[in-house]
Length: 186
Image 1 (cartoon, helix red, strand yellow):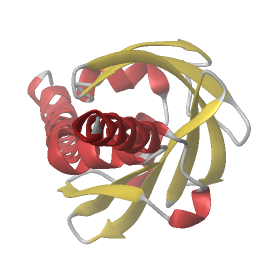
Image 2 (cartoon, rainbow, N blue to C red):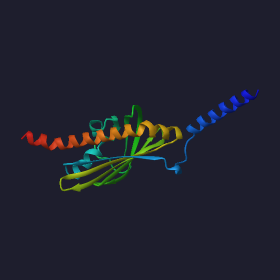
Image 3 (cartoon, rainbow, N blue to C red):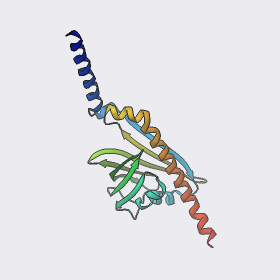
Image 4 (tube, one colour):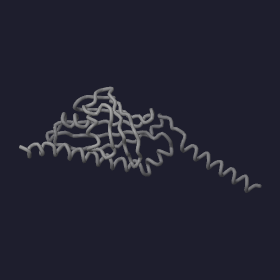
């Protein structure tokens, strides 16, 4: 009888611990993750800004961006929205991005929602330099549960950082190749 009580207690404790992993976390806990990638791009800040804020270009340079729909053919203005089909760290989904901040050609921020729930914020910060533009991409997302926080720490964060690094490297290559291609065609 005593062993049975211990077994029931142990199983109950395990179930409670598992349940706690999936309970939504309050936002005040601050379990945010920041993925920051920086590159020096040999193009004027206005050219970089216009390119990265035009959603039609995203699938060309960001490996996580599979397709975009909505307002995609121009640099998005404050309050405009676009829907993006994505695959981040192997997970597919759909996010609706809304422009929350726009200060051309220095700063642009979009806030994402998946199924109406906050999914993260992407901010592009651009600074003119003697050689072109210092481009910084900052993706911030929060852990909605302890399970997600643990998975993020063990696996997800590194994969997202790698995808962001690849994206910004591709962006640099595309934008720096554009002027060379037009000179070669003369």
